[in-house]
Amino acid sequence: MFRHMARHAIPTRRRYLRGVGGIGGLGCVAVGGLAGCVGRPSDDADDGSDADGGDADDGDGDDGSDDDSGGTRPSGTGGPGVTLVSVDDADVGLPIEPSVEVVREAATEDHPPRLRTTLSNAGGEPVRVGEGRAVHFEYVADDSGLLVLLPADGDYPAEPDCWRLEEGIATTEEYRTFEIGAGESSDRAVDLYATPEADGCLPVGEYRFETTLSVVSDGAEPEESARWGFSVLLE
Image (cartoon, rainbow, N blue to C red; front, side, top):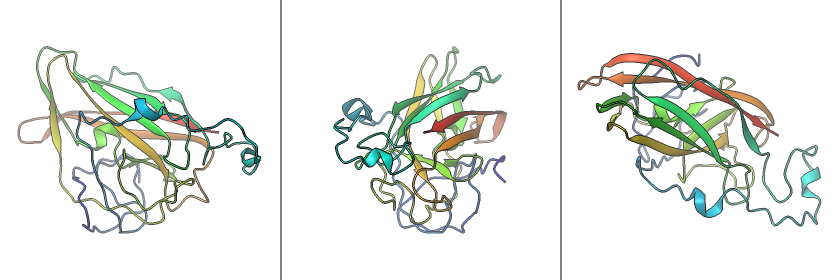
């Protein structure tokens, strides 16, 4: 269900799409149901991660709230912290190299955890890649379908301090591409949410995310493709 690529997607507000149950590895998907509004930052948009750094914890822990989830929730946060436990080799046989980092480790009342994905072109020629959201893990779910990565700072139907989507997210069906210049890179921030299928808020455990990276021609036809991914641990 998860290991294929939908060659579509530009998110748009108030646009509805036939729902799909599974969403791992997709460039355009609907999460769970059919409703949702999506906002996508530009490739070079400032995600603001240097301002908040994922550490909104006041550190006092006076109310003992860190004990209400079996000791898995950092004091003062709305969910477990996220760490990278494995990342595939960046040498995927394409003229681009993918990477990922955690830029905001824990959820708080104000924001969910955040990752940043980067595609680097170390070659001497520009390269065009697609699908434009899938390559940066936007709208890509983990293999279990319980977590999904969404463009940072979008307006999504999720309860603060929980970050479980209350209803689905829909996107339009278009195949998007963009160019990375020689010696340049493209990066985007993605926030981590639980899907409506999850039981409760952000579920603890280890989760694998994987997507398809494609080098495309001027006609947006994939010429070379490779699978790449990583695993995160919520605890």
